[in-house]
Length: 259
Image (tube, rainbow, N blue to C red):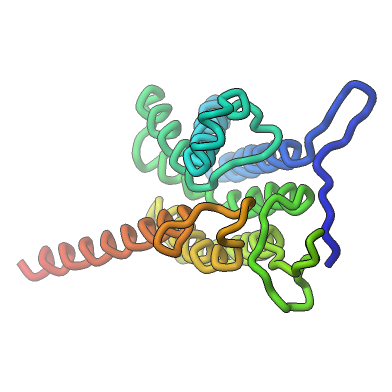
């Protein structure tokens, strides 16, 4: 595939940044999806609407902060650049942690019970894969993810002549597959929160392996530590945390049955 970068549309004095527009569409899709599902499950839509602004703010601050910390030398010497989020530069895991923190704070002040909180979380993660795919379309259009070099026929031919993995396209495809898996698993889960955990596990697993297709050691590449990107280390932490939790509760359940 030929390299291209379509980062903005200018209509007179108005400049529309493509990546930011697709990020906004991703959030809007999630909102309307959850609202539609909440109505069917008897969840108050006003609760969803009132929490939405909190979640967006938490997700954006977390995502931007996570990205800035990865490239701290650049951003700390140019602090004004930190505010230019419409130009891109977000970290998924930072956004996830920021969103969760905002959700917990909101739930505490709104006195949302744990069961209802987990029910809404399950609806949110069912919307998440499509939202991720929409946001990654923006990444694809601006071509801001430099892939590792490859000889595959679908690689992107960059301006320097190297053929690189289409990272954004991989992320879009994996998000769509994740959506189908979650839709299949949902009827099988009876307890609130199980779908949320499944999403965290499956996304982290796919992200861990897909990050090997990203470039390493170039100006545009993500920083790596002991051969792995920050996203891979965070994904590993989530995967191991879920596995340890599952083993711990299984053993505790076995002990309670035995005694």
